[in-house]
Amino acid sequence: MTIAILIGLGLGGLLAFSYYLNQKTPVPAGCESIEAACEGCHASTCSRHPSHREDDKRG
Amino acid sequence: MGNLITMCISAVLINNIVLTQFLGICPFLGVSRNKESAIGMGLAVIFVIFGASILSYLLYYYVLDPMNIRYMNLISFILVIASFVQFTEMFIKKYSPTLYKSLGIYLPLITTNCVVLFVALANITSGYNFVEMMVYSLSVPIGFMLVLVIFSYIREKLAIAPVPKYFKGNPVALLVAALMAIAFSGLAGLV
Amino acid sequence: MNKQVWENFKAGFVKENPVFTLYLGMCSTLAISTSLNNALGMGVTVIIVLILSNTIISLLRKITPPEIRIPVYIVIISTLVKSMELFIKAYAPTLNAALGIFIPLIVVNCIILGRAEAFANKHKVIESALDGLGMGLGYTFSLLLISVIRQILGTGILSLTNPFTEAVIFSIKIIPSEYVLSMFTQSVGAFITFALLAAGFAAINAHHQAKEVKDNG
Image 1 (cartoon, rainbow over the protein chains, first blue to last red):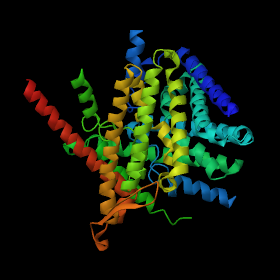
Image 2: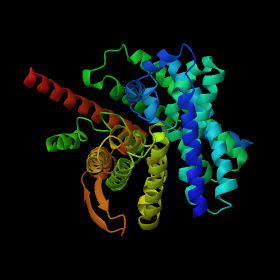
Image 3: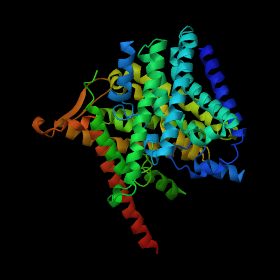
Image 4: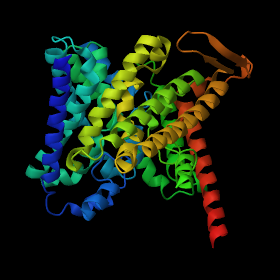
């Protein structure tokens, strides 16, 4: 049971770490406009989703 | 060998992941508006499913199973898939802007794609060995991309066709998907 | 304040129906909506997961670092879904056999992560729980719509069994078996039913919007 929790938290930490690094990596030059054009669907976990853009602009 | 070919044809055509098993409908409707995004999305999905399935398989049989914590499969698979997608996106951002332009923007969307998690879980529940797992994990997303690209060609024409008012957009697209489903179900007796 | 909460709650049924208007969570909707049993089973599971995840995420909203919210939500939601899956496997095995792999796939159901991201991390606990309930009920309502249509047209029988005890609650034969259209139990019928219902909801929403514009302007 404790191993399970450790693995769960370990992988969660890996995800959080990679997610954080990914947010910090800048988009290559010339690609910023593509983000604005993507209106694929309503999956709000996608970092391209408009709701994230408002948050980033605010803070 | 024949077994693998049968599995491949079955996964791509007969039990097509979108038209027969109803998975991946969200990106199927969302990203199929034009050909270029369909091709980009398809290639990204193939890459992610292949890589993430291998990692999940190894994690299951070398970590979860020996330690008798098979019940962690769902949680660990989704975390592995999401991490893999994040690392892939970072890698592409840094080393290949052209690749990023064509398929990098779809990568975050693939995390919540049913198909990825389904393939990762199905590899285990179907009891595939390593080679079978690799063939399956390649065939399913190839089937996805096939249907997605065909659909995008149709949708480009549909966007300028005189569709009745309330059917514009997704409803008529779903009716087209119904016709495609009938077409693909005709392949049922192939193997 | 209360009117706002009630409006939010009602929105989940027609105006912001997660399945027909927002097109979220479609994978499981199309695949399992073949019978009333499946629809209720899946719907109730999603409601429970939604309420619990919204509540937990709302409770933790002050202490989650904003940069890693999504990973935190994924861990919470996948733990909840796995617990539900184990519960269903243990106490309702026929439901488990019918829903199959779609119970674990609730994790990637866009509705749950979507509500967590859009609502639960900005609102208080009670509001978030109610929002989860509203969205879950809207989802179940949509599932029931499709399932009832597909079950009646596809098999002619409308029936409900208790998943925990296998007792049949009711079973009504509506269409004689010669006139049954079995395509509705397969993928074709699913897509067609969904398309027609989606068009119907688009029509209803457009009508309401036109009425609002007329009332206000």
